[in-house]
Amino acid sequence: MAYDEPGRSGQSESTLVGPDPGAEAVADDLQNGEPGRDRFGVYVFWETLLLFGFGALVYLLWQENPAALRGNGLRALIVDVVALGLLALAAGLSLRTAAVNLAIGPVAVAAGLHFAEQSDRGLLVAVGTPAAVAAVGGLLLGLTVVVLHVPGWAASLGAAAGVVVYIEQRAAPVLVQGDYDPRGIAGQLFVGFAAVTVIGGLFGAIGPVRRLVGRFRPVADPARRRGVAAAVVTAGGYVCSTVLAMLAGALLASVDGTVTPADGLDWTVLAVGAVLLAGTSAFGLRGGVFGTLLTVGAVGLFLAYAQARGWTVSRWLIGGAVLAVGLGVTRLVERLGRPASEPARPVSPPAAGEPTGGAGGWAMSQPEPVGDWPPVLPAQSTDNPTDPWGPRRWETNSPIWQADDR
Image (cartoon, rainbow, N blue to C red; front, side, top):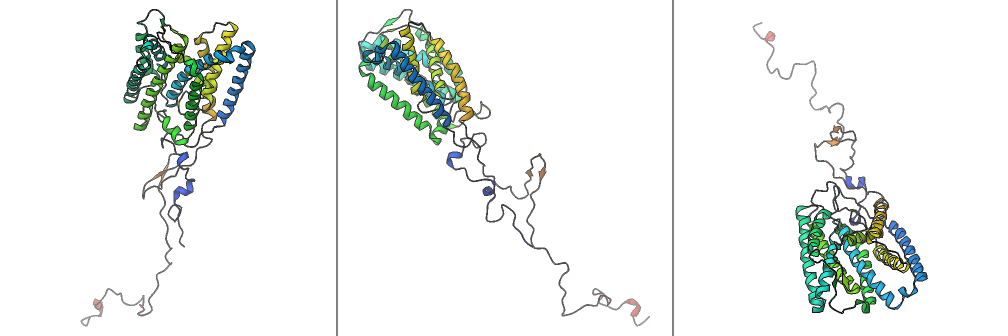
């Protein structure tokens, strides 16, 4: 009676363990990663709430100061929202790569000071030069993080300290020397910012892109290196986030007309808090689509509403408040946004003679296949039957007692 063992017939053992999860269910780290598609229902729910909050702030501001939502007031509000949005994009991009850039606030203030001093010499000197410096600085910061494999917050905090040293060289507010006014192109600025934000969120929702951007996210030991792809993406994220912060600073300086020397860390707290409130995880990888656009719009509306009411509101207060709520949103996103269940991974059959561990840690050998059982007795030949009581076959001569001399 012959039978086949599982895994040794035409059906492989991997098909018995579970279906192939496919490309979308394969994690970036096969040992420690989290396979499966993220659930986006939590983002739909949270961004719907943000939309309601945005609408409520529009209504409150319209009731308090309708002029802020039309004409020059609306254009000024749009430019302020776009400037804050660029900072939020910088923070969100670095958070998505799991290496937050805390130097974006000081970089924005330093870029604003440079723009105020050099704006009368043309946009190439006022914007192009600091953009090149910001790109080089972001690259050096990214290389420090990925080569030494150190936490991004620690390295970027050291970079922020270096930028603050540059800021402290000015003791008094600096007037903007040029006459460039971005409020004339406020509509174009908002459309461009919204397009970049939404398209970036849509690309971040694609599984392979999402895993690639968040490849630097630690999975087991945070000190373990995450590969060349993670290093390249993280370094590129630092470059882009630093350049975006520089552009935000130049835009703020052109609107305000005066730049006051400050450390700029309040802008960092506000930007990081805004993207956390928007649904971007503090651990990296996860984020929504419309959250950043709605959040920076709501923050801009609240600042305009507070100004209309005559309130004196510190950026530290608003940044700390949105950061506190954003940490709760991170827990919500991580709890409800991760894959619902882990699909079964294919298991390779053990090699011949290799012990396999049981559930309790005991090792037991894999049984070998059993072939056909042999018959009870061998078949007897009928050609030359042998008498079992006759002379033994190995005695070729007569016994000694049968000899002739006996």
